[in-house]
Amino acid sequence: MKNRLCFFEVGGATQGSPRFLRERVYQNMIIDTYQSGAVMRILQSGKIYRASPSISFKKEYAALIDMLGLHCECPIFGVVRGRKQNTGGRVSGAVRIRLNVPREYVKLTEYTDWADFLDNFKYTNPNDYSTIIVGSLDVKSSDHLRVVESLKHQRHLFQYKMPQAILEYIDPKWVVRYKVITNTREQEDRKEHRLNFFRW
Image 1 (cartoon, rainbow, N blue to C red):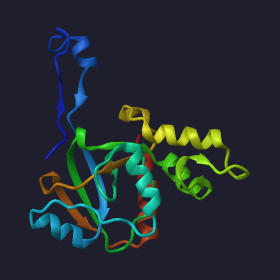
Image 2 (cartoon, rainbow, N blue to C red; image 1 turned 120 degrees about the vertical axis):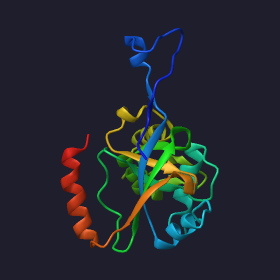
Image 3 (tube, helix red, strand yellow; image 1 turned 180 degrees about the vertical axis):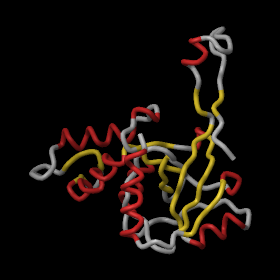
Image 4 (tube, rainbow, N blue to C red; image 1 turned 180 degrees about the horizontal axis):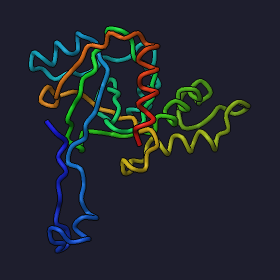
């Protein structure tokens, strides 16, 4: 199944016209997500997969859910095919699942901003993840607020340097194919690092 590039006529623009071409949008996004074999079996059974709440990052994920207006207990992370991506986080035995997801079900964040948010979280006010505790010297309040605003603000795919895809759930109808990763984490990291040179 291929990603379909669909065109919409807006305000009288006709097919083939420059304006028509400028207004083209992707209807679907091709997303790769790394999950366990158990998740793949759920999808193969025809059931929708929803991630269980995280124990290690419960508060951080709750903040992300709030920032993006998600309706789930735990976000599902993925990468956009063809775009530069973080090369960490993969483990031997994981399954890489390729999804063809309708655009309206995908939220995007800048990976580096999400990484900064995780680093900053220990300095945030317990009752307000967007503010830094008074007296914290390691993080500037203005820098953290910029990170939060970036995570909240959805923009065009081309405006992200290293887009991270966020899903509320995985519908088995979205699955294009899957592959069990047999490489070690270090081997996968090296491979993805090389591939990033060919991604935009």
